[in-house]
Image 1 (tube, rainbow, N blue to C red):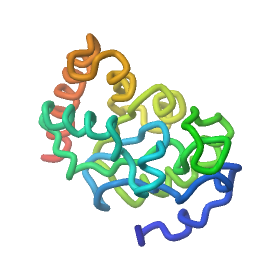
Image 2 (spheres, rainbow, N blue to C red; image 1 turned 180 degrees about the horizontal axis):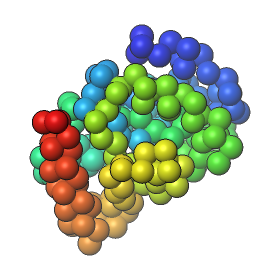
Image 3 (cartoon, helix red, strand yellow; image 1 turned 135 degrees about the horizontal axis):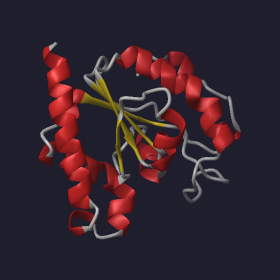
Image 4 (cartoon, rainbow, N blue to C red; image 1 turned 180 degrees about the vertical axis):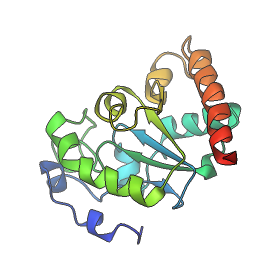
Length: 176
């Protein structure tokens, strides 16, 4: 993404040594909604876009079911590099120091996106960004839903309802 060339060259943490590329996000800038998830997985590292794996496809379905168009969103993560201990290795959770090192980049993205609403996806996004975006909609990560049954997960309807209520709130902000 040409809007954030300095982010593409980031070397702020050890993930720079094991990534294929910096995964800034997916979507257009500006966007009505900023979505912050956990971290790029292997698929995202290969393709260079956020939320393009199975969890991302489920998130897009959940958004559409709640009345949110993914094209109205810019999706990024708490860290912009695939967290792994080896080059192109298995996924692991991002470390707090990696999230802290990447926070400036995520906030630059937020400034560029200029959203009317923020959706925090998963525990890491909630933990590190809920104080920065106190009005954010907070949902369970779709990867957790996939581990518990996907669309038939007992948590799916709850997340969908949170998104439906959030979509109503977001649309009110658009009209202001």
